[in-house]
Image 1 (cartoon, protein in one colour):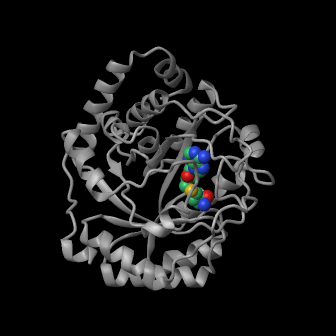
Image 2 (cartoon, rainbow, N blue to C red; image 1 turned 45 degrees about the horizontal axis):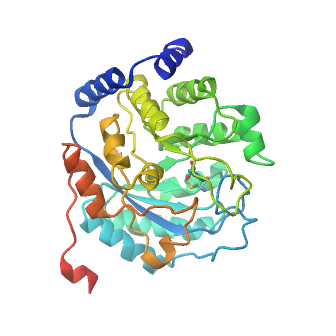
Length: 323
Ligand code: SAH
């Protein structure tokens, strides 16, 4: 797909026809199965100052936490029991010593025999390679916006070039790479979304997560409007056509804007991944990337998948697990 094809789909294609086409492509390339990732947000400590994010270092109003290795293992065991197909370890950037994280990765990979996915931001080749050797095999690092100028404005002191360089390093170390971007950041345009889609295509990503921007009250963008759910869904459908084999999640941000239907609509638009959270309740409330962040439970994921007429391998925990 070239830029004018994408712009046509963004501006002119009737939504119903686009969704129909995306669904057809989805069924042909991915079938009806929805893959579920077990998300563990193991720390909200961060060294960056992204203008949109509630975890930014300048936000002194949140309680910072870091789970212990034992707490992470307990959450990972619950996720494995619930039938997820990978454990995703996510945190702010610079939350831990690289060696500490390597130990956690090895323990999860060897005891639970599940692929480990990392989402811990920008590091050097040394750290990425340490974690790859420790057993991690997938990495999520969203480029956030493909506009150079907007990227620099939103991430003081950082450049899009470095983010892309990190994705290329990860790919060269044989990680499966997951990319993504936000929709509705102040300054984004239809042309910049077309560039977002083209960049994901160029990087040949295995996964691409698209979610609406949602303001957080302690950030510089507190008074901006949220991104549109409709436009986010349209972009997910275009991504399904542009990257037929990619894994596309219906993001937690979609569920936050519309807790009843957000993820069901994401699946109908062409998504094939959900990421229920296994972060312990007490910490999940402090992982406030944006206001009123929703926690997607296993039960909610099962309901969304079944309502969308799709299949999954999730199981509800035995009552004993909660005692
Ligand atoms: N520190 C890691 C993980 C970031 S949190 C990293 O840098 O990759 C995961 C994602 O949340 C981000 O990539 C971003 O796309 C999303 N996010 C952050 N703030 C947001 C906001 N205000 N609204 C919507 N999504 C947001």
